[in-house]
Image (tube, rainbow, N blue to C red; front, side, top):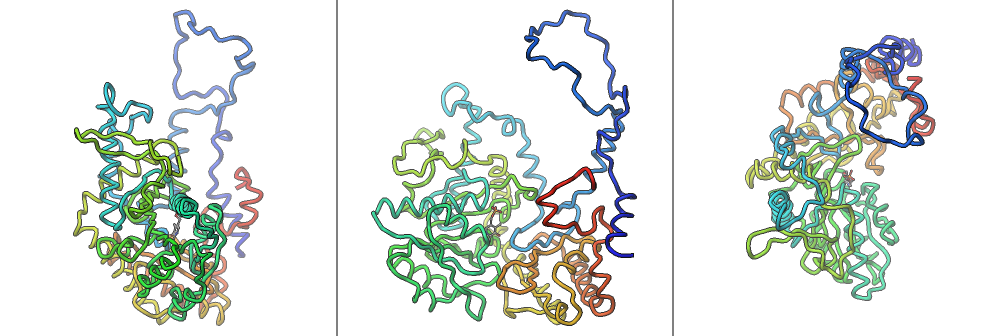
Length: 497
Ligand SMILES: *Cc1c(COP(=O)(O)O)cnc(C)c1O
């Protein structure tokens, strides 16, 4: 049976009908008597619909079963291991969810007054934002943060706009930004949207930015550098401080993509390496939920000399101990998001940091690094490891051995993991590794879970030798086999699934 036949069979056995298809004329969840008081609403006829809305008609039980069935098809950190490299899919402690759902936080309206009458309702929320700023300063070595950006990429854009504003203010005529070839795609996009030209810097034989190349590329056009450290190969650049110094020597600024902060937090600070601007992915490093497109939060921190350019508004603490929003910042790049950013996400991160404390955050980094190295050591005899050295929070393998020998690609291994109950690692990224498989276990997984994953990877390596064709049919246990990914984006047709 080939993949498509299997797919057909599965479609039939697993199909969930649309709720509209389950509708039966006249069926109701609740029946209510007609009101015995006159209709008080006086809506003009032109605003009333001519015929009843076409809503599905179902019993309450039908509705509950329909949505429960759909919810069971979700894959998440709460159900299974999710080693999606670079994304840091770690467990989200439920205590943070609980606190974020307190009505005093969850029901706040952003237009409530900050001070005076009504201010009592918002002071606590402002305090959370203010103290999150202080904690992030301490963790990263920056002088001040904005919590407005809604994601890492949004933080990058904010940071690069700050970089542009700094050079404009100093009348520096600079246009290029150095970005390593291992960078996340959002780095060059953000820099380009902020008006810069990108100079891609190839990695050296150790997988990190080549300092000799940086020296050669350095000139007065260079506005700055954008880099994550450890990088997307999970490798720390031991020359990072010298690289930042080089950038500063031409009055450039160094931007730190903080998506990999969980590898070093509590241990080392990007500010101390020499970085001037940092974004932090609260939804990665600080265990707030993410996936499915959001919500996220990407606060941006800057060194002293860039504080004036931060977006408005900023939360400040007054002498009388109250908190207020400050708008009076003439050099600010302006609003980057409405109100305060994704407050609920900031609050969850605040709870997480307070809960773990200084020593807990250190342990996060230690265990994230330990777990990644454990996987690396256990798998490196079976999968090609392009950079065989101690890694930080993630390790990058290549499926090239399997490809060359049996025509099995990274995508086949990824799909085979789904059948074994695991979310696949990130594949085909970073682009500088052929057939890349980027595994990030995070610190929250137990040794038992990690061992089961390793076992699955070993089984797949074995299967690629004896029945490679079967791997190409995976996954066989999901409602959809292997969709045509291009068509799924360009001609999305949910109803026919
Ligand atoms: C996730 C990630 C980003 C982008 O962050 P989002 O929050 O997804 O917008 C940038 N750089 C790296 C290295 C990342 O892993």
